[in-house]
Length: 137
View 1: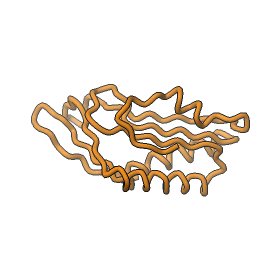
View 2: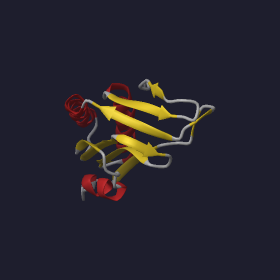
View 3: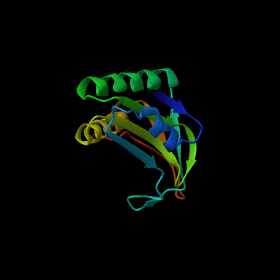
């Protein structure tokens, strides 16, 4: 499952979507909106994307993870719109027969998502809003 959404991310449903009797490990990563970025106070984040391009990149990332690790399930979900502090903005869930592969695949997936999927983030701050560049893995 790969998707963009304006709706809250349901971590339990995401975990169930990758669970399998063949999986001995399920790793779930939730990225949340934090109140501080360095020394800057964050009031909220606003995410935007050109959906067809971002969804195509998410699908490529899903295929890449599946080619690199013996995963059973992969789910990549990113929210769009304005998100308040504490909200889940991105989720990655991976299942595999063994924990090492599940952790490696999940780490790779979130790092690659942040670096390569064209989702733009605006940090809403008391001193003024600022667009934040993608992170390098």
